Image (cartoon, rainbow, N blue to C red; front, side, top):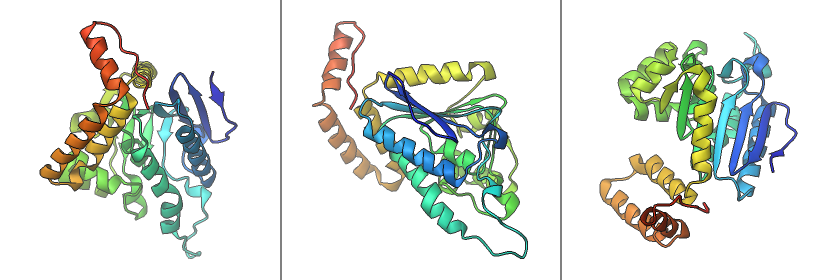
Length: 267
């Protein structure tokens, strides 16, 4: 049965092996507040505690995905006292990105509109990003004298190379979903009216998939840049040894040989 928690800035449910999380401040383009960060962490707590969850979908309500930090949520005035943005990053944004990237399941992001600043960073932290054709990605940090945060300075260069990463980060120019897909910044650009349907199809696929194998795949690929090939080959061997002993592997092989649909148990 679907489970719903009482949140004010997000919509959250768990049903049929999938957690669905919608940023829900449409009047503010779903921009981040301290409250939203707290609710996102609580939702992730719930996901990690619920063994039935095998995938997570993140999207936004209304016409935007996420406009980044809600600048009105922290008082900043010319000549006034300077805020400690490092504390905000350390306490809120970094834990969110760390949790999403290490969550032992596929995280799907459906970008339904503009993704700016930390909103773009949030999308890039997900494993598979689908974006509606009308969506745009904006590294808006440059426009207010800041650096890309929430992992985007790390992920941009790895996804699109130094030249494009610097172009995006220094100009703050918007990039369309089509260009983002063309550059390899995201997985796929889809027609606006197909976004929900395509995201649902992916979520359904992952909710009945061999989750442990997918989680180990995610970990291997996400950490590959930190290791030489020799070390990666050894890790692949170790994971194959471990997963080869899993019920899901035996189920997958038996289903293939008997031309039937596999019934995976996940983690």
